[in-house]
Length: 329
Image (cartoon, rainbow, N blue to C red; front, side, top):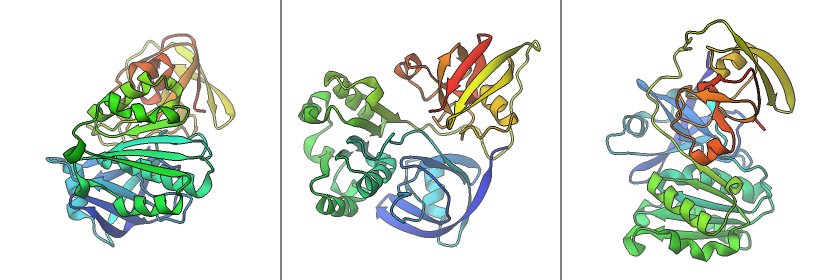
């Protein structure tokens, strides 16, 4: 079963009129850009950590109220210092391979949340340059405006912040990002509403940024509840495939019943495989196929280029070939 942890809210910080940061009195390992899954009343929601694991910050998520959004309203209306919240420990692959890499970061609205974690971590622990393009409706909507200003002043040779305000500049188009050509050798990270990320993706393609340098974070509201045990067994004929797994530099081989999802096989064998939602709506369990073929029962998060690169979701994968090799590296 999913490991559920109860944490205490230490503080709630008002960032803008419709966004708050929830600070937890807790200590757990995570990587810059990862997210937590919170039990928000009767539902579960994934919210990115805006804190850095490298700067002495207490863990915090930043949540923007969404019209008719049950989860964000529950967080903004109910969480106060001293409140206790059930969470699933950090997950996600929206994280730099090295904090020394040069980074080209794109965020819109609350998409700044995981990006802020990456910025603070890279500036604190890394050596590369960081360029941030941050789009918002207007100046009052800019989350972390003061902190970004402080970081730009503290690291003038390493951090460049480019604000895009719809109220002044209109909606961006791919051609507006042509000025970023000098940074096309950087690793690109994108987080924000789908239309914004589509514009940025098209711009990066025009600038010939390789696909393996483009990292996209997408979230879809969970329809199920990972805080409740719900392992689905599918009908099968008793036949088994073989799964070979590379996780954290260690290799493992298991029998894989054809009716059982890959993630369930790994967890049943005691392997600490990453996951969160278990319904194909986040990328926490993403792995890469090195040999063989699987079919996914559901996929709401990976695009065709991810699939072409061999990326699959372990929580939705069934074996097609007799042997499948995957890696989490």
